Image (cartoon, rainbow, N blue to C red; front, side, top):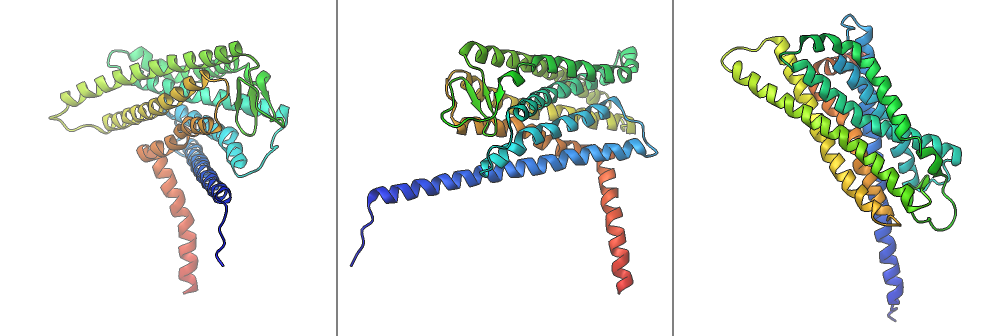
Length: 329
């Protein structure tokens, strides 16, 4: 006797399998991004802590900016990608209203600091390479901490609206003009608030991205002139350090600009619709967090001081194990 399954049952099971596959892919993607991103930024921070405590404890302005950038990216991943990953794997009701306000506010600030610090890094590197600005070069170390304070105050002010609109998810449908983050909702209540918030954030980001692109273009121009001048001469150690640092900065700027472009294309689309699809929101989260995930590995691979500290730490961990093994033999 041949059993014939109804078509509706087959379609339903196929749809369920497809949904489970999508959830698995999304969960694994966020898990890898979060785990590797947290690990990379933590390694950069630990390396700079060891450098600051060692004999060569002097940190250059670019070192301080990179350290602050790694810290901002680490907090960004912890406040955005960790709860997002937990939500994807079925953990709900993670935060109440107060928790959502704190987490979303920290995420907004650190996301803004990521673009601002990358811009600051590019501007400081351009000033360092500028051939006719000795006074500006001498003043750079004294400008680092005031610049950090100014960027924190600026972004705390720009992002001040985030806590007022952030709430824990409610049972039922998601209201219009609400960003459904999974673990929290950002309810703008009306179209005007929705657009004003989007425009304010976008204008700030575009201003800093434009400034970092201009300073990076200036860096490339200086490097091109420098390479023509010293083509027939052997470069000194200091020139090599400056060149590597400049290339690292330009690489970080290009990396940020790529993900910033993808992020804002999705964001502009989200501003044009009343109800945003969860798939679109997840795509924006992934691309907006990709810079925080990838940038520490570019920093580690191009910075000899950080790479040297990490290699020394690994060798120190291996040497007791090797000694114990040889004694056992």
